[in-house]
Picture 1 (cartoon, rainbow, N blue to C red):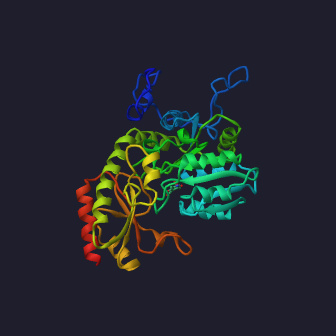
Picture 2: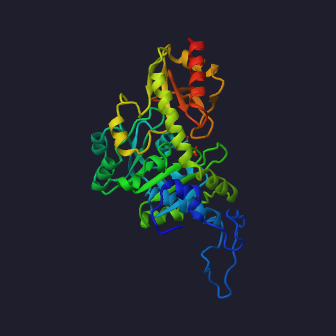
Picture 3: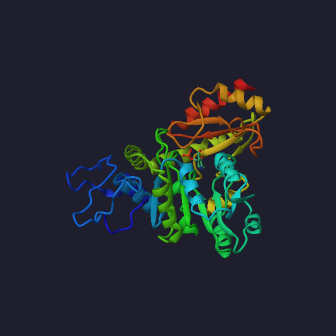
Length: 378
Ligand code: PLP
């Protein structure tokens, strides 16, 4: 593309402006090869030998993500969990790590069973992160912001400073913020992870994950090596679909933010709703931090607590017609979910909570639908 610094919307819409030199095609081909020709002198000068390490179809989405995040390099994985576990897998066994008490539940459960010493803290408190992070012992501080499903927000710059003072890395699960709203590397993060299954792809039809590194250093090369030797490889077709989704990421995120703001404000005034959890609302406990580190909006994710408890919450979800009762988030279609039913015993999620992923439909239609469902459930 041009030598000028371009806006993320331009980088994404043109997918960095790549065209296929061999054919002039404005869309790059999908590569299906699992193996690559060795040069007659026994070298692999074109840089590729076998597709468990890499696939040319990854180049464009990885480089686009690197540009959007402002990092040094990115890797695609076959799921968000594969991306996250590649980061943890690159640490020495038994490493002490600090992680949030409120975070994506399946990863919290995985960390509890992994051969790591995980300490879970209230990640909305820098004091709590600092108290758990020990110089010379802690290898990694993991945060997720905004965090599932209370949408609590962690001060990324503050967490980075604490981690670095202790000689640890800071890794951020930025799935919900996306690089459109937050660029953790600019705030000091070392690694950024996404469940690309969500906003990056955006169409509920690809499982994928990503890791972006702030620097091409030894820690990053361990993760690159772990993907190649561990074999957590995305298919070429999925990489192509992911890139196609990423080209509209700014549009979709902007739409979801504007709609979520409207829906959150209206539901906060609804007498059948006990509480709306959305970092964009001025009364959200972490609103000030969110306003400082998120640009252009507060995301498309919110939760509501329904008056009448668990029964009323499940009944509300039963009466929606437009919102789809399904897990996941970040797709063009809006989803609603009784989260405690998914997470089971021991969850920090209140039983009256419905998690809502605002998609790209008309916000008035979405609001009318949830309002009629609340009325019917009452
Ligand atoms: N991180 C967050 C914030 C998520 O919401 C999810 C999935 O819901 C994951 C990680 C895991 O990603 P995946 O389902 O793509 O493995």
